[in-house]
Image (cartoon, rainbow, N blue to C red; front, side, top):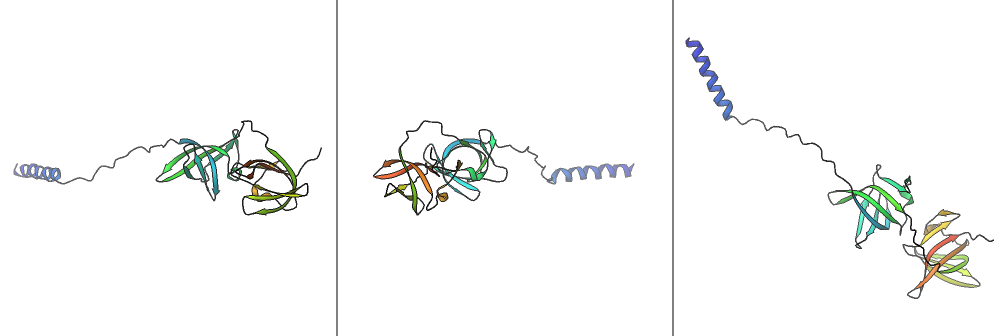
Length: 194
């Protein structure tokens, strides 16, 4: 009986020691929170390697980063990052990672608003100056035309860029006069004669 009493006493002592000993914290298992993308509209200001900058509707410039999972769309069809054009309007679904904006999907928006024609200039490219001027010879005189982010390009029925303009090539330019400068709305080539 004495032996049984000691065993019960030993058990009681162990219970007290166990109650006073801090136990390891329980692993809190929280389910992974899925972040819902936020949507924004804007106009492309610049593009770079795996990123692009837009001007939002409230005139803020925001840098978006892309990754291999980023989807690029035009009319529900897949396009590529290279199809982003400065001046183009886009809708972006993105998530924030700290101070970075990560694009999940980028949808190119076609501008369907009718635009006035502007002045038509047809001629030959004499030279390209910097990254925003092209000199066109037409009717024996040279005309300087400036481009801006809204200028569109179409060469041989394919979208193009300013860097696609070639000296000596025939060119067609639709432009407006703004602040005493000829600013191109559209540049295309070669000229198709009827």
